Length: 144
Image 1 (cartoon, rainbow, N blue to C red):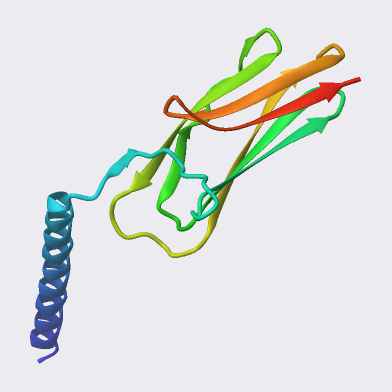
Image 2: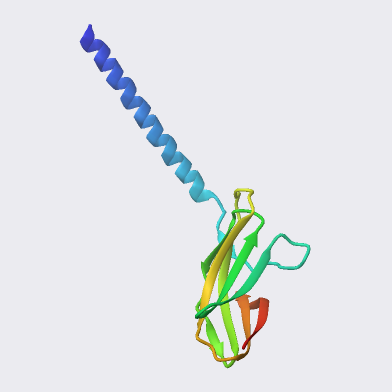
């Protein structure tokens, strides 16, 4: 009698595990059919949008620029913050931002990056922030 119960218990467990595996495999197949994906996105920083960019110059031993992006939900990411490119007194970065086309968590999301500009001589400078080649914001600053 105990052997029969053990066999039935094992058979039930094997059936449950097999069912769970098939269920997971089926869900993965459905996810593959899903059209959602990451697509290039240029933040819209007009006053009436939820996207926001804050640029702050940090004057320490080495001059740094902190850039903070704010998005209306969790469906955004920066895949490449880029390196600072300098031409004379102008520094430029061109980031790659992406937006998820599917559902995302509804919470305001902030991401930031700090760019080191090095030791700069006194003068006037400009930092330009771009995404996918489009200028989103810039800041001019003076060093004494």
